Image 1: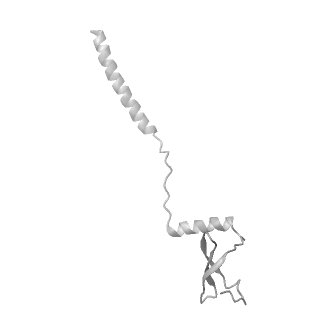
Image 2: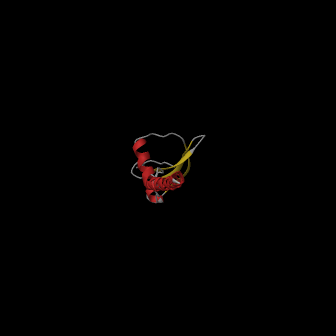
Image 3: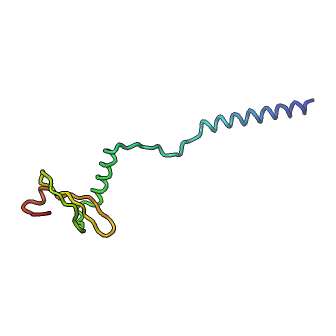
Length: 102
């Protein structure tokens, strides 16, 4: 009789122990996934501009100028390109005093 009770209580104890371990594990579960940060377009653009400005401050560029167009502000907007890539660029009115740029 005692052995039957021991077996029955062992089963119950093991179920209770497993349940307690499951509950504790659920409490101790850590979220190891990094929290997603949602950037607005303005925030993302500002951050990219900041990073590129720090890395490439005072950087000289060389390439072919295309699609040059003067603005009423005195700036010149154009594309600077080589055989593999192109980027939009601006030549400010402060820099082009007295120059015929396009």
